[in-house]
Length: 106
Image (cartoon, rainbow, N blue to C red; front, side, top):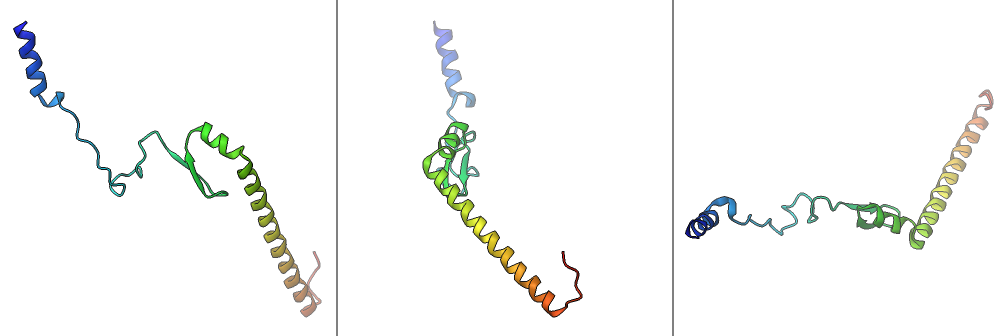
């Protein structure tokens, strides 16, 4: 009866029974950027979007129509850029060969 009442009262007045101080909502002070630990975020550089860091969210995004089209477009752009670089290198090499006919051909 009365013992339990006093035991409960002493528990409530002790520091272990009190609520913890809530964290600040200022995102600049929070090292996780506002996301709770365990809720990592993932960035897709191709689509420039953020999503949940879990496998399900990433799977939905990477298998989605928009990502597949964006990845294909990005691949084509990189391929075109690489072809242009090769063409430029070949032109430079051709110019060197014209200037110095002694260079061995590869």
